[in-house]
Image 1 (cartoon, helix red, strand yellow):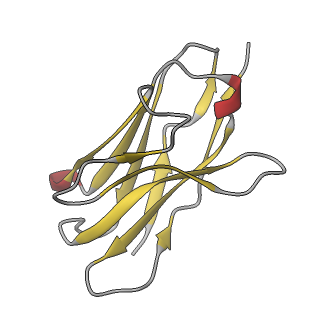
Image 2 (tube, rainbow, N blue to C red):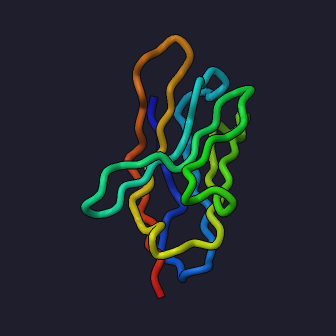
Length: 116
């Protein structure tokens, strides 16, 4: 399974970006898929996850600003990021786990920089 994240870039504070994570296989059987981020000098942290039949899960720092969604037909998970703050600057990674597996699949990451 390969995950390819895209959509990162440079944006001013208050701006928006939408990240996409495209899987090389069907995501119909995911147990969880989500976004994590790692800022320089910090540990990787959860941003948002989505699981079938459950409400999305968000980090407190992004709740109300970020929205995770998935398009099963396109094998893609999205992260809509609004009201971006400098503290959101990080490399964003997507992760997926599939039913019946214990392996976590990670994408290569996409850089998000929030700066004026």
